[in-house]
Every structure is written in structure tokens, then in C-alpha cells.
Image (cartoon, rainbow, N blue to C red):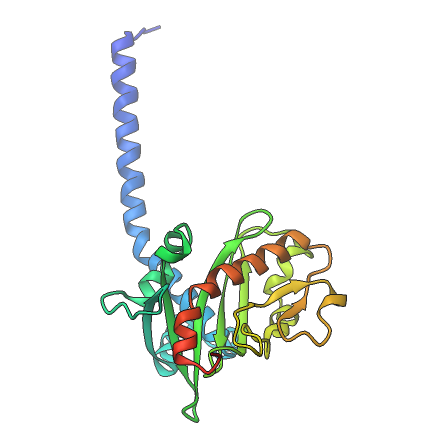
Length: 245
């Protein structure tokens, strides 16, 4: 039986590691454009869904083309503000949204805050903002649309990485998301109060609260914290642009 020296074995292993690394790098480079496109389509689809558009997405043959067409049709403007509400002319709203985790990891006062302007067929506007936070087992995120008063929620969608099925994972169900429609983030005195996810007994006739998910207390609390955390960054802009002040 032929034997090999330690040096030979080491060099052979090193070459194989390099070859495999090069192949993996090549495959990753080839897949990246498709991954980037999928991420772009997913974000655009979510933004549209927050205002009830792209509802028939499952019925179209070319999902990507449909989402791009609908996004270009209805989202006719986007911009970025800072915590003080000042416009950031050199910032791209969609690029920031694609990498929202980078902003979410910063203190609230150091973040950049994207806004997407939706225009319906009658020329009415709604303003969509992304949010990101932490659930029980991982990140949660979503998009919330506001009426022109920049106070009343017009629509919302949420999603998660790995919340518990049948419990916290229900944040992405229609029945839960629809609870947010009509809720307000400022009280009658113009003070920011956000929207909380509370037990049913605490939400009756409360314009600033929705029912929590049964058995999903930690995820519900995380979603409440996410909304407070992110909406706070828009307060100065909303008060200046809307009618909540």
C-alpha cells in the first residue's frame, strides 16, 4: 500500500480547500443577482400589500413583472427623513429599506427613515413606512400605511423570521393586520402614543390599541415595542406634514 507524507497530505488538503472555496464563491456570485432581485420584489410586494394592492398576485403568470409594474404605477414618490424630520436629499428610500436592519441597530436619533408615497386611482395619497423589531425567536418587521393626516393607519402588514406557528406567527395573518386600520398614533391633544397590542379587555373603544394574539404575548409585546420605536422616529416629520399637531 502506497503511503503519503504529511507534507503531501497537507498540500493536497490545502488545494482542495482552495478549489472548493473558489467554486462556492463562483456559485454565490452567479446567484447574487437573482437573490437581489427576489429581495427587491419581496419588498415592493410588501409595500403594495400595506395599501391593499397586489392582492391578486397569486393569479398572475409573471409575478416579478407584475410587482414592478404595480409599484411603478402606484408608488410615485419616496423620500428619506432623519429623526428631526429633515429631508435627506442624498439618501435612497428603497436602498435603506432593503437594508433596514442596519438602521434598526442604530439608536433612534441616528437612523434614517424612509417614506413611500402611494397614490390611488383618485389621486389620494397614503404614506407608507417600514418598521423592524424583535419577536420571541427572531426579527419581526412590516410596513404601515398612513392617511394624509399622518396619524390614522390606513393599512399594515407584518412578518417574522421564525415565530411560533399558531401563536406569534399570526402577526402576518389578515385578521390581525386589519385590526390596525383606523387606529391612531397621536391622541386628541396631539401627543404621540403609538398603537399598542393589548389584551382584549384593554382595547375596547381604544383608538390606540388592538387585540393581542392569544398565546403570543412576547411576540405581541415585541410588535408593540417595534411600533413605538419606529414611529417615534417619524413624529417630527408627521407633525410637520400632517394634521396631528
